[in-house]
Image (tube, rainbow, N blue to C red; front, side, top):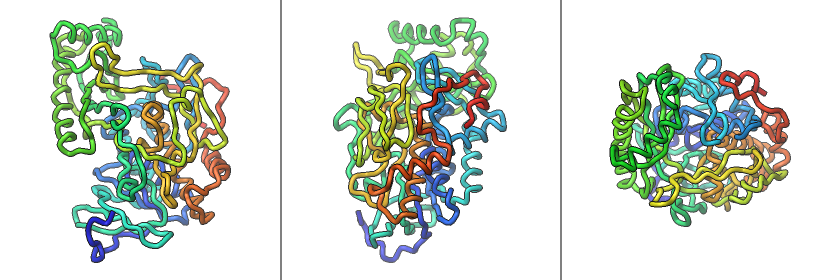
Length: 457
């Protein structure tokens, strides 16, 4: 983009592989890229801790298991190392999902921050927190110069390969690679501020009817005008921490997360709604009488902004038809979960399931931006339509994207080939060596509360 003259900016680092964004996709990309210890890997993250959505706003990994009566574990490899580390300190449990998204791996997000730290350090990944990508320069054919900013000023990072795991496709945007802006063709999914509450009497809550009772109380509060809730539904689930719950209930729609005035207003509105929910829960839901909010998400949760146009674009038809191919680098069994504004007479969240509890494959080419030679995308900015994206954005899948992108970057260096020229068969072999699941398993998974150990590959 070259907005300014950067000729006098010093070089901060030179690296084989640069990962932009330290969320679950970016961390996995960096870890996968360091499987070859000869290659240098650098990760930059704008916040003071890694994990992105996994540590900023959520506490449950979805996508490891398929939904339905016969769940199967479909994600493995390096993602298992993360969950195994949490399991070692008793910081996870398996939790069924009411809406059919499959068994969730609920964890302690504060512990997960240190797990990400330790995994990155042990792998030899170099990383900088509080560092933001601001521009991209293209120099020689095999080198990209990224301009970053942190408290010490502006610096250059020279990289042979780049993985855009920024969530908002910031690298692709600054490199003039093509993308769709959420909201241009279909309404963008709403944003959510998550919050946590302590001193919840979960036994009393369950005895009073649990989740079905809460749903009835939400509808009653809205229909009778008792509390101005933004929606009639939403979820609250128990956390690893005793007598605490975490929510996905707030709904902020019709604002653009890439526009600073909208994003500022969204943050304010999300916090306002959180305390509306607190008032409702304390007033109307048994077990919540003494509960109080003890924390909110680090920022409002953004579901979609820019979605890159890749060498292949995942579609709703691919998902619903359970399409698979010899180009696939991971599986997804999650339903389409489209969070909408919810006008009168319309559903607030649209669910559409893969028939028969099946899965679809996600081709390697969804991680390769059109026109890219030495760059990949991973995470929620990957190449998918609005509907397909609403299925394939669970964190187990974004970790799988990172695992595939990091491995592809290594293979690209090894074979001196561009991203779009890469041999998918060779990539799949390397992913299988890491433990990735590339054939649909026959074995039913153990999804009991403490069944994780029985599912390790």
